[in-house]
Length: 293
Image (cartoon, rainbow, N blue to C red; front, side, top):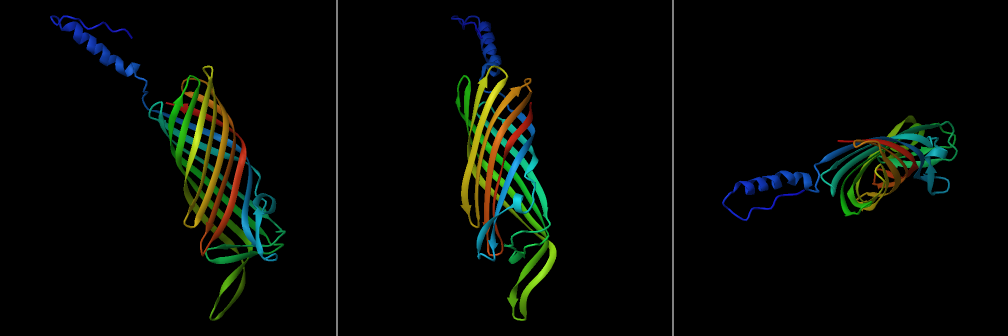
């Protein structure tokens, strides 16, 4: 932008006033700080899932790992909906929120190996040969803040900090043997055919790093990683996430992204009434479409 120099004589103030007005009008245009913008992204994650839970083996009299996919017949392959929204204050600062959901159920007509688990103060026995339906509901929400601490000609680096909120619902329906705590009038075991369900919501902090590398005018390679590990009261949780993606800008507003992701989540929830120790991981390709305004 070219601005006429201020006159050296104060006899005619009009050129000076016109010059100041020109500078003030041009400031919003030349400033590097951009107005706030929103981006909404929708996608599908084609996941391969592996889920383990720690249970008690009454025969060996020790804990063992029970796999939901191989032993309880939960589907290994499943499409996972994904939603993300970002608000960018300017080139340096942004807020983000994303959500993904994976609800699955499976039916095992003939349980091979017996096991026990404790929920709501009761211990349930699943005998060999039992009929068992299993429900596993996982909802993962992430909210955080991103700060761009490096901006080069083609490379940008963001530091991410936020909170993961994981809702884990676990249910069993079928032939269960309920252990009844001894009472003065007696006690024992009871055969039931019903439903046992427990849910845990674990908000845990996380830190991450995001990298963007621009190639030409339309292609951006993006990689980000998140991690946390925390023990709070009766909950121990950890999470590892890694994504590598390529984004193609169709227009100024629209873009499409293909990526490969790996996600592992662990929740260990132990109280006097409930013991849930689940390790959950999924991995695979993701396809996303985004709109910026």
